[in-house]
Length: 75
Image 1 (cartoon, rainbow, N blue to C red):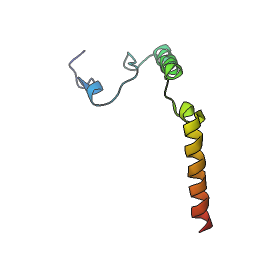
Image 2 (cartoon, one colour):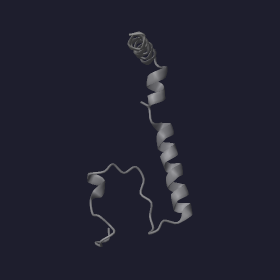
Image 3 (cartoon, one colour):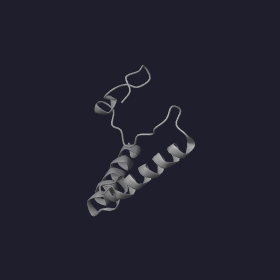
Image 4 (cartoon, helix red, strand yellow):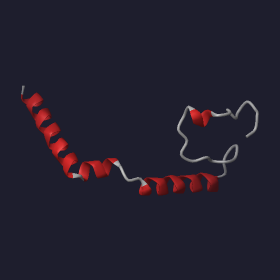
């Protein structure tokens, strides 16, 4: 790592970093590569929001939430 004003040392300890993009400013191919890496990480993720919704438990919770919202709207 470089010790300079635009590079904050150890920022990844405070802000979650999924992919590092080299360059200042980064080249377009570096940004494209980083986006593809993020897409791969999302594909490999097991507990996604979509999976939670499609599970039986998720469907039951979604139906219960919908019923609660309907009751609130009826009042």
